[in-house]
Image (cartoon, rainbow, N blue to C red):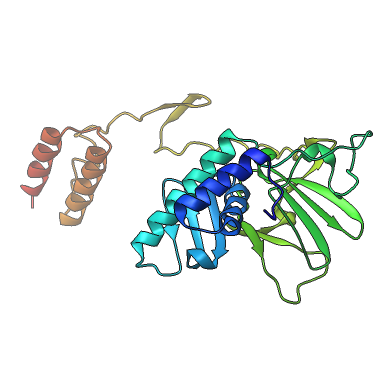
Length: 271
């Protein structure tokens, strides 16, 4: 077996490959894809499984031939078994740490990050993904930085042609992103984000009334039906204006349906 797996994981992979009628290399490739997706999703390109596809636990399975339901079921079953294997078995052997607890002899990332689910290089930079601790290590120009990936479940690296040197873009369930959108880890902890100044509380809007104290509003008393707004003395325009005023009081709940209907009828009777 070409991949670095524990003996127990190798035995499980051989058994899964035999039951699914696949090569061990194909199963190992899918194992790495599921591990890169945190055990819940995978993006893969495996010829034995129809080429490129995606899988999400309990949800979506996509294969090259979207109408091949048998292949979809096969991929879903395989990924679920590999997800369970990752959750119950030590699949990857632990990395040997240096006496100083810093970098290993063969790896460029800090040893305390453990074993990455995937590594690679792009545009002059190297990267290593650690989904179990939500960490991403990137080395560029001899400097290694570690980032907190937050809710991102990195499923792959966005291929770039002729991109700026030192840039690496990744894909997750949220789409494509790069390290400029991540928080860099300092001393093993996520650097504290600046606290934004709290905005002043908005002044509550209300119809004309009175405020006895902040946040306490008293509704204005309803206009008397004998007032000028409801007892017009002019022509039709005044009567219609008074009806509109009554409608506003009715909509605000100041007048009941019966009171509004009675007064409206009274005013219309004056036309």
